[in-house]
Image (cartoon, one colour):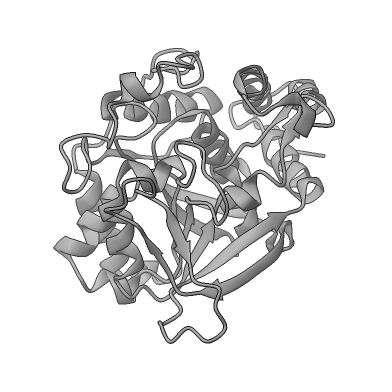
Length: 327
């Protein structure tokens, strides 16, 4: 039985990996993609999601969501200011042909509510790999979703360190109020893949070459995007054994297909800081054994790059347009 899922995302190069993995792997069935303001503005995240799906020949509906954070007028720091030091890392539009498929008329939040209230979708996993604005809005509009979403798997936060500030990862920092609301909503199961896990399984130029060697649309895109990420990665070379970069978002899909890709995890009380001057957007993981706060999420701390690589290659070897599947 295929794992059915909905992806909420803000493409973004690593979001593109996740979309392709979910749309192509034989163990998954991607029902819908919703987009949110995040890595780039909503009009670009929506166009990028459509471009990726069109390029690989996957017929998956795309729904546009929130164009601003839950309560803030904009990101905590405007995007053009935030990216001033490395403007080439997040390109507005992926280097793929313009989309041919139109975005759906129904808003993303309505789609999420309708999907997860439907008893026929009691097994559908929600994968959130951008700011959590759409998820928070859906829960706000329909509180019953907390009991109807069987599992939320999200990429966000960091137990130690951050990538947009010293303490915060981008997805949670971009809309900390939404993230805090989601963790407090009482969902049945939340699995968090923070930077700790994604940075433990970076991909290399050898992986880019392996993707290209597949000779498929997905392999070509994965190779191009991975080379871009490696070229723009700002991690000091002294911390790398070879040129590499983390590709965060697809790990959320990979852990559904191969749970053994996660090599270290545990359940804790989890929330997000919304007011700290130096800690805005920080993922707070309460690891104290004596904490009396309720457990809200399972947090992954490490991953197997070998398993991750294997899952990606299995998916990207498929070519839907040519009817080709892996041998």
